[in-house]
Length: 419
Image (cartoon, rainbow, N blue to C red; front, side, top):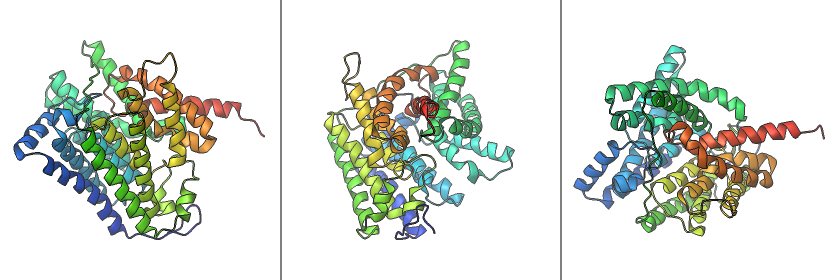
């Protein structure tokens, strides 16, 4: 396989890639099984399955740490199975989709609510007479809209048939909308499907409100399991660094080239830099997110460890230490201004700094100053857009990131000169 950047790397067998990705998914499952009794796990999983999951619902509190870890693992394994059935190798977007699904299994997604959305995208592929494989990533990332399914079922109490139907419809339209919006932000928002999901959430919640039904935000934010979760996930990210170092045999030339890439969509790091450098990058990006949580005295809980796994997953698909840190710093600076209502460890601000790394390509392409400005702007916007989609889009930062990227790219392109 040739590198996009024309440098050599140590090739990793596809079966080894599969086993490494599956190892981390099963590891979370085993940890979850160890942490609680069977009866507690059963009750916890039941509570998660019956939760609306709207932003911001910490499943570590709703169902307990063990049940949340099992739920996240199940969601990730489902994504893994779907990819393998459709013979999709673990490329950058495949890794990002599985880790993102797993992470959001800690605060919003559950095993039954993701199925209607995936089914909707599958039906879209059949209508288009195309292989599902060509729409598989909008299907997996499109599970951002699961609160739309659960809200209709449990909050509006319209029943499972109505909720499943709405899930199928939203899954059906996510692929064409996300494809179109990629053109708008030119690949500078890594969570492009989250951008699309924001518009779909806006569509549905506007219809709901017109008929007297509304969706409100939730704030279930755990603090009591912080040290346990810190140990678990920092250990996982360190193991990734070790694994990547072993696979690259300590030769970091390829990784040095990787961090020079701007990270715009579509940046497939396993293809262009090799799996060893990619897993090393995943570990380092996850650790940077963890260090930020510690520096601002934040808490490790469902949403924040979900953010760390998402960051790590997208370290195979555009993120690296050099393009994420300016964006995170910009979001931090926004919390220091006199007019802000957020401290750096406030849930909204903390998640904006972690998930705001969706804008890493702006920093990678146009420099750290643009990255800092993008991060600053992102916190201001993400704090206010949830009401537009009724907090029914789990990738709220993706929606905000799409807005920020579109504004910045328009300005940059407009101000460009021939020089």
